[in-house]
Length: 377
Image 1 (tube, helix red, strand yellow):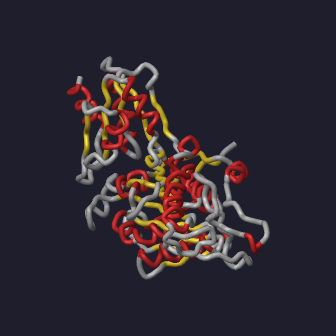
Image 2: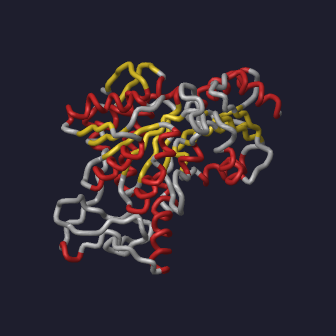
Image 3: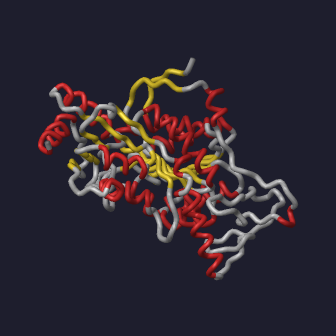
């Protein structure tokens, strides 16, 4: 039958995290994501979970990683400046293959930027949140329902691929309030994925002895399975190594387990593209304006449709390549200066793409999209 309630995007992230099995949250307050942290502080104890506000963003991501190493489903949340502070330990999570969900309710930057206004300024940061070679996973909800479903998905992907996963909201989606219909809790429980656990002989346990394109199998601490954890390149048992063959294999596997499993990871949505002459590419809250703009354009006899990437990273590259071949006109609109446009250009190999970008904290209304699309015709 489903569940109906009136709530916000940030509240739905908290709710979904708990229903996905999250039992640890560490964070530090920052606009516009603090609602999530507050909700987790109230609700986690009811689920036999643990909440801690650390002294800063660095401490919070360290605590979340430590909890995940012990077997918890862990989450931390912040906005752009806080994600910057978490950067080094996010890299540690990548190389050690410790699953973690990181919520970023985006705001304008750089630095302190525009704390209380809408932005999609951290799209590039989500692809490369730290130094080194790796492949990141970033999900971008465009509705309240997706704030819930993509939080579940973020935990599933983190556990399945043993990696940090970003959940990218923007301020509008995070604070938007409306009625939403959610699946029954029993149906949600059937969707939830938990990390693989090694049950073989303790003496032969090698957590990082994983095949290409597969994640490590890290048993929770304190369960009798001994291995080493380090931010250095490591061998099969986790001890540091500088062996060039092993080090190259590590990086090939870290990137391959994401990029070579795009078919399982990547999600996207299409809207009125079947008969469209113009493809508008938009994501997050701006996709809502684009949808309204398409209705207005069609009233004018202009056949527009929308492609909405939900998984920004890894990008839906095959679908974007097909868009580049199929449509005479492509139009990209974002609440930044073109961070995803570069990926669209790379995949489509097109330099004739129409654009509408804004980075001043204000949303883009449908009529502005309509006017810009008409200019390019």
